[in-house]
Image 1: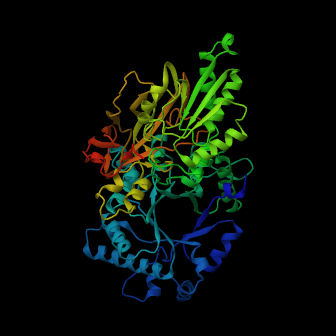
Image 2 (image 1 turned 60 degrees about the vertical axis):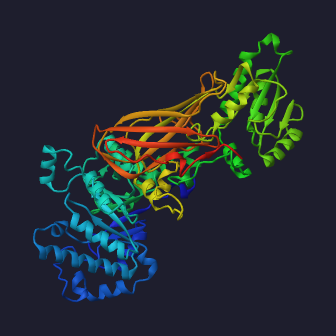
Image 3 (image 1 turned 180 degrees about the vertical axis):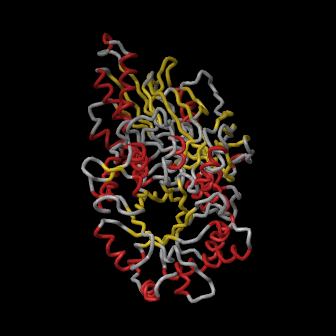
Length: 626
């Protein structure tokens, strides 16, 4: 394992800025990556009408050294803003104005210095004046990113007593949710979680992990000492930090050194990071695509590139399952007594660069059955590769290359087995039904379709990160105002919280008993919110059965180990919907068709109605014609 894979970024929080040069230089000795420190002395009573040096409560020489510090060092500083929320929310106008003026002074100086990150503490549930001041400053000139530090438990003991009486009113997640809502999901505000008490239960923990976490502050007092004298965390907290480090988030150690050296805290974080590393093929393949929005492919309308084919062909499990399915179908269809005389006709429709042809030939060899294979592909460029493989790899086999659209091809015979890989991340979104129902006229009445069944699933999710990405994407002048929210996106959803388990959406079966099947669909699904959360969109998944019980799935509960060909789909909504525990979420979904296109529409009716998204396919459609 390379060092890059196990690297973890750890900062050290200083209570005061006593000598910034020596503080920065000491970081390297303890293997810290950056310092979190205040530019204002925490116990200094500031006044806005005195000179700038006294405003910060620092010696004049110290402020001057800050002004002349090298830019490389400034990148190692996260500035801890010293403001008191109770002053911003005071009933006295003078006190509120004074707090506002002092915050402006500090933020202006940070902007002048070019410090890239700041930390502000959200330590009470009332903060609207503070949020408004910070938001207003960010809209005018914000060269830094603000970490909004939220305690995992209320800091004030009076709040804890109130929490016992009103458990939901002092849920600190609500503080964060209120802050990001009133600041309109500002992209420069990120969450920092302070582990100031016992961690919450698994459901609450999962919800925090679905937020745009940037770092976690861990006080030294929560560490225990093992038999060797080194700092360790209890099992539940260690597992939580492992999940944090899996997401490549940062850690800040805060508080006095309670062990031999601060270095031991860093080494323990490195140990947790190393133990959290996964060699799972999906995690490794998705490293560069986490929470990265992509438009779904439309291979029926647009020919795929060689690079795209190559990416899908690297899947370590898909073609093994296909080979198993074809092999079992051959064994069931042709008895051992007929093995030398019966030739099974296999049609690979949408052959691409030929991996399913190879899988079918391998299956025939393993089953000891004779086959004749038609490789049907409309992409002329891919056909060139198929012809090369026929000469170089399949020369000893009965393979016919057909450069045709499967829907209009006049096949010379009917197939015993029809094999295809036309599925998208939502099952039918690459128009597998339209293709296979058109091609099934070339399948014998007792013929086998591989796959023979696929079902899409939908689930409500909370994802601040994905919502803000969709919100910030560009739209063109002629496009509908909701255009970016009326697109399904293929995305490896890393930074999200599952509000409720997935439910089935649409199912297609092949071959169809109907000669002219209707491919339109409608479903209504009802979900129950497991805890307070925010609905940002609908996640889409699918599973498919290739033959009998041989399946492939990206459904979270039945995920095929090692499967990397498909990431889930996101159907966004324009206005986030606030949810309370046990709220009913009612979602309507349509798959609609006309002569030239297929499109999805979606709608939320409970607890708060949304508009119908993508009405008549105005923003997104899947084209049937070339």
